[in-house]
Image 1 (spheres, helix red, strand yellow):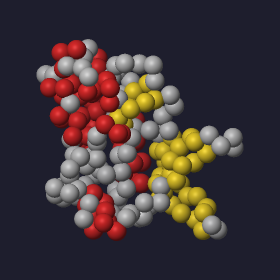
Image 2: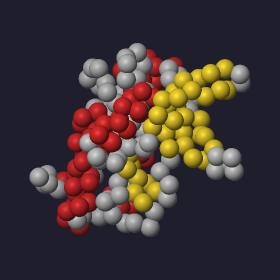
Image 3: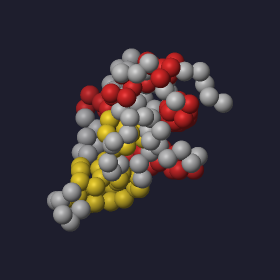
Length: 180
């Protein structure tokens, strides 16, 4: 898809750059990108819009994201730069090894904020590989989301494009009653 890691002057990865309008052929015509490629909030712009919505709603779920241009092989490419979450790790062991009754009220609330956020942006691709918590923590109160590019769809998903949509609904914490 043309996604590139960006590094600081010391070679440390500090972010990811997703170019506008570059998708694999299968994704372009059959997968998630087929629903997203030609509208105004497509891919990188969707990442930026999701960040701004998270920021405006004070959810602090999405990484800092800006639209920018980079120069590659003498040519300019427009896309989104996303800052990497520092000292975060995937949440798989937190989600999969605990029963719903073992989650605190604050953890449930944070998870539910993420669920509401995903419904608001109609994210097609939320799964364990793009949910993170702070390293050293073993709870969901620091939950963060990456990969919001497959959101803001303009029509309903199909079985190929929507296979990850709201997949978090199968996690044990999702069984908790809604916290008002």
